[in-house]
Image (tube, rainbow, N blue to C red):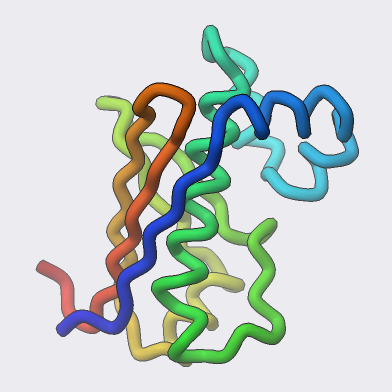
Amino acid sequence: MVVGVGIDAVQISSMRRLLETGGDAFETATFSGEERRAAHTQSDAAARFAGLFAVKEAVYKALAPCVGKEGFDLRKVRVEHWADGSPHVVVDGYLSSIMERAGACSVLVSVTNEGDFAMAIALAQAEPL
């Protein structure tokens, strides 16, 4: 059963400007250390950061209607990538608690870049596929 669906798009050029003007302070306030390290290994770190941010927002949109918007911390939604490059959300103590309140047992995510945009979708479900 589907608990919630979220989708988001982030303009890569806007993320690039934000990274240039906000620098390390923005990165550390928004992304985990592992997300930052992985992004900086890419040929276009801004595109990776835009994709990560889109995934975080999509997860928020999939779960927040079920648990309320207060207290949802995007910084604590960690995105990692499997060996094949596909993204997944790390379900740890923070996200596990949010998902439990929403009645979700898993969140599936997908991200793509097209032109100047990174887009992501999240599907929160009560039962695994």
